[in-house]
Image (cartoon, rainbow, N blue to C red):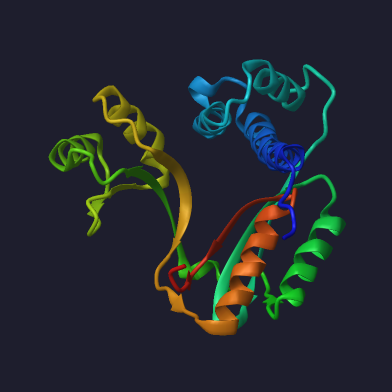
Length: 239
């Protein structure tokens, strides 16, 4: 019987994944600080990026250094925001948001990924209209539905979605996300997950080989250093 990966190999894999996550968040902090200034109190996008960093145990020194590089206090790399759109197998729409210091490299890598798994890149706006930008605060199934719903309404949320298992999503307009999140936190109702994201208006069900290719494409894109976020309207089979 073959031996599984060694403890050292597993640790190295975990460290590599952690490094990728840190790289993506540092880029996000940099772009947010460059666009809106280094004060998170007046820059909701930066505040959100910092919170994301802290949630994965990024040190304050690393965060502060990223902000200083972005605002010119330290020498740093400039990143450009780029969005690519396309289709995966089965007509699944895909949005790929990137932060890159080399546009030529990034577009080649994204195009390669689409082609490798049977998809194709589209033009700007070809699939974005199928998605809505919104803020989401997610709560676990054992959360207090009444308290969350009442606090969310008072905070100005657009909707509260309750799922069959009792989990809840508080939905906000993108511009209200920070204020709603702060109000929920002040009410003692911290979300397990919170971010501004894109959600498809309608999902596209895929199965079999098509579903496998879609899953591989989305995983490949998410693993790329230049890719910050991947959105799709795929409805995949339960594992």
